[in-house]
Each structure stands twice: as structure tokens, then as C-alpha cells.
Length: 384
Image (cartoon, rainbow, N blue to C red; front, top):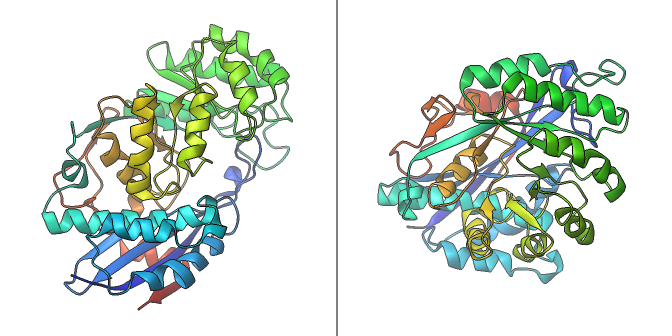
């Protein structure tokens, strides 16, 4: 079997006006998805996704189109480790982080999809999986609305609480740290979530790297009283001593980081006190890169809690990886408006009372809804 081509679709979803303001440090009004498909001479097509590092998705598309894609043609798609090594070591100037790793990820996910289809097995079974039931938590709690329209940060909270309870999610994650809110206003949001969801639902807060140590110390006593499960990304990644200091001052575990893409970076995070470790399969080099990090997580006796935000492809690959380990947290389910979750595929995975069931479909078991792909594609290219 040989690789005959690579197809790349950069897709865009324009969000509603009320979703224009999002996390504590970033305004969203569009969402993107970089769809990667690998074609073979036997007609088997692998589906993958590359994330983009906060900037224009065209940066990742360019690496896929101009650099990595041409290197794949004629290779055996089942030589996954060899292909991964070739891409990883292709240019030392990339430093093996960021854009380059995001591009590798989409290719690697697609290659594993092909491998599962060839074997007639779902990927989690190809990797010797433990189970096929994955509990999930809802991830939202944004600061919705255009600037000035949501002064207390409460817009959308009531509907998200209702949705979380209706679907049976076991946990809920929300943003904290928006500088235009007072500490009391921000904590009132967290208190509202706890009161609405009760004590049996995990409550998680995500600061999106906006805190410094003095601000973190102001939040701590209140968050500890509310029984927060973990604090996600309190600081920038290049502040390891802040992570270390905070971890020694609180009984709330720290989590991170979706923004890290290297195995060495995750090693540093764990040394700095991070307990819930959150790699993103579309950013760390696909399942091949992710499994290296998962081994490190296990060796350091931490908890695997993958970040899932971009599309159903990312979420599905994470599910299969979670099914291969004994110790993991719940799957992150992004409840914000997007065309790139269930609308992107024809047959979603079974979901009941907050838990996904991975079916026995080969590979990652996804069939694309080409109407959605076509409608949202803003740039398409192929490599042969």
C-alpha cells in the first residue's frame, strides 16, 4: 500500500454575536478546523485534524502543503513510526514545537485511521484498549456577549447549567480571571455554578494563563471552599516557578496545558506541580506523540486529562487514547456553538447520561458530512 495524496480543507465557522467575547484573555468570533485526509492506492482514506496555534490557520496549512505533504507521497501509510520520525526530525529550525507539531498531528491521526481500517479494528483496540466507555464533562462558562453587554459575566450561565444537568455530564468547566470583572463578580459566577450543579458534579475553573501569583492567592480560599476539582492553566507556560509555588500552597490540583506541544515541556510542567496533564492530540504530534506523553504521565503518577476543543475529530481521537489507559479523567466536551462537532460527521458515537460509547467501527469510525465540509471550507488544496 502506498500514499498517493494529501487533501487539506481549512474550514471556518462564524459565531453568533453573543459568543464574540470568550475566555479571560482572548476574544473569539470565528472558529477554524484544519481537516487532513490521506489517500492511498487501495482506496482507503484516513481522516485527521491539525489544530492551529492561536494565529492564522494558514500557517499550519502551509507546512502541511509545502513541506510535510510532499514527503509522504509513495510511502507505506502503515510505517507510522518511521513517517513520524521523518517529519519530527525533518528540520531542526522548527524546534519541534508549535506549528510544526500541529501539522504533524493531522497526518499522524489520519495514518492511524488508515491502520485501523486496514486491520478492521477501532484504534483503541489496535492499541490494546482497556474499555470503550468514556465519561465526559461539559466545557463552557465563557464570558459571552460583546464588550459591555455582560458586565457581571453571568450571561449564558443558566442555560449551560440546565444543559449540563439534562445531558448527565459528570463535570463542568468554566472560565475565570477576566480583568474587567472584580474578584467578587468572578467568584459569584463560580458560586452560582456550584449551587446550580450541586456537590456531586465536578467543578473546574480555567484561568487561561491570565493569573500571576498574587491574584491566584486571592482566589484560592474561595475556590477551596467551593470544592474545585482542578485549576487549569493559572499561569503562562514559561512561569514554572509560579506553578510550583501555587501547587505547594493549595490542596486544589493544578492542570495544564493545551498550549504545550513538546514532551519535554510536559515533563517540565509535571516537575512544576501539574497533576492533571492536558495534551491535545491535534497539537502534540497525533496519537504517536500523545502516547509518548501518556507514558510519561503514567511514570510520574499523574492523571491524563486531554484537551478537546477544536472538532469531533480531535475529541474522537482523544476518546480512543483514553480507552487505552487505566487512569484518566473525563473527556472534555465543548458546549459552545460550533459546526465542527456532530454536524461534521454522519454517525455520531452513542452518548447516554454523560458517557460516550466507542463503537467497533474500524479506525476512528468517522464518516464525514461532506455538505458541512463544503459549506465551511475557505481554502482547499491537495498534494500528489
